[in-house]
Length: 415
Image (tube, helix red, strand yellow):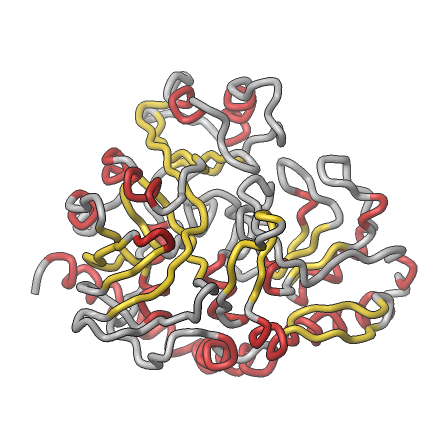
């Protein structure tokens, strides 16, 4: 047994008892409200394999690194400039975007994912420099250090979703091929689905710099609030969304851009995976497989909201939230309603290149009076009543989106 497997086994044994104690309660709640991950995959996934070829270990804590990111992507040279801020002693900048997978093969060369052209599978991919390895703990660091061009590492959630592991092959738009050399716990990959080198990422169409990991001088008593002014000063005057987010070690579950929002891999597990393609008439929108839409997206008339079109699994949550709002005597808190199901995928979107809107799992409330970037004017009761039913608020983001309520999956940064 090598160090990597021994580390994973130790983590699993250490947490087994705690998980067993609460597992039945969590399963009951998730099955009642949204259905478990297996049901979600059966209703919407494209992979024919129901049995994963790798097992999921209990993820270790996120690396003891700091994180900073800018809504819509980092300006040019921002990552390099972070290293010039006093008390920042090491940093690494990573890219992230959606790569479009056209097929996958298991280690024996058997076809697993076979979407029908022109449809493809969106895979959230991050591209890293060699310096990224220093932010991954041992023994997992070895896998990252050995990563070469044309190779990739899957997150454990992605490996289990696909039913793939080391030795698998992923094929992407343009004929690019990625050979899978291993898997890592989700927390060590920022919950991105695929990790590759920067050069490989560029070939996959993944080129936007998204986030910076960094260390501070040992013994420093800096807080994120201390660093924000210095990092904000690094932004050019023409930055589309002039705000920065900073996290100290342990403040967020996943070291990634848009860490307040539920990730695409978590959305796939909860709501099913779709095949799609960039809309031929508008590259910022998705043309999603009509079969998936028919199976998962539904219009309904709900109290206070009127007729909305959302994922079927979120309609119950929204209905309950509206009942709670009415019971609290705040039925006038909603004056206008925006989109719920909105299949967008824009690299410059301040919420990230692929969001809950594409699954029908977010909603805009009172958008006329809460334009993106403006100071939010939402009633406090509305925010409070949406939260218990699974919706975090975008109004507390560094670049506020006061109308945005997005389905969340704890743990995340505080909304």
